[in-house]
View 1 (cartoon, rainbow, N blue to C red):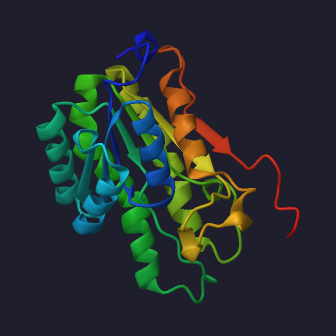
View 2 (cartoon, rainbow, N blue to C red):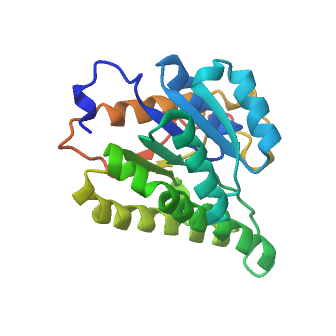
Length: 243
């Protein structure tokens, strides 16, 4: 698919994992403004359906329950998208979690949860959707983090998972280029989201906003077909001057 041949993006079908809040929901809101059809998933089917209803436009939004750490659930989610709209053009592997503690105090259960969701989940989302993306010559995005290239204290588990996402995505990009599938990883810094127990408010105005990342995805979809920004780092323009 040559995205640059499109005067608009209305034909595209997008699947966003972890789409019930934060970055995923913000992206969905942007895509809907541009007329795209959007499926969002979360671990709770009821919550995903509730958020889909809040987004409105029932014919263009689909809420799905899927735990990305379970390949069969991701396969079922992708099949529901194909059953509803007959195609899948863009997948955004956004589901993720973070637990922060010194490595000697990090609970093995928390380590496993981060790896299962942040890293294995990204593989499952691609594995479940890759044949559909081959058919549409689509685009696969992962949401990594600046923590995928910058390590920090108390971040051993999170760093490991996000370093892994960056490496996985770049290798997958090389594997899938022959099928005309584009693959990019987005590496945001501070985002105004619910991540790590934060409640977004005016104090987060200096941060990247979830809708900013949705706009970035639109920009990448519009890139010339011959051009691929495969790894994109995103930072707030200015730091939090009050801290």
